[in-house]
Image (cartoon, rainbow, N blue to C red; front, side, top):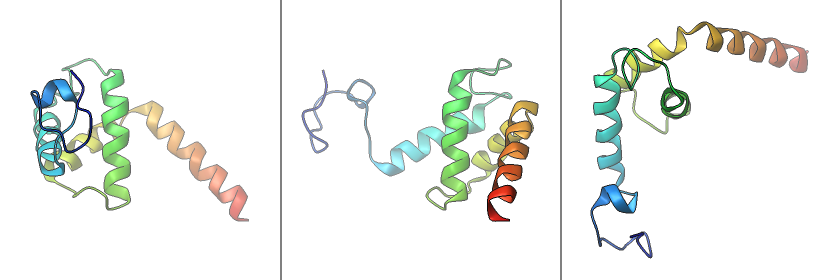
Length: 99
């Protein structure tokens, strides 16, 4: 069952797919804190791409607090060679366009 509006509290939150900001923040904090080293264990998955990117952007733009669990998890994600290569490409592109 999908809630008809954001104000509809019918049904368990897990099934209606929403919650208040503090609840979502707590769910993310727990997931990031339990990551070993990734959300689903040893294997890097699409979940890490989605959640890791959201946390990195949220912290960078001050939309999310830099909780210790978020910082540690995004550091782990940031150490991945593929992300390091992409950051280098982004930086080079920004330098070319700012010159």
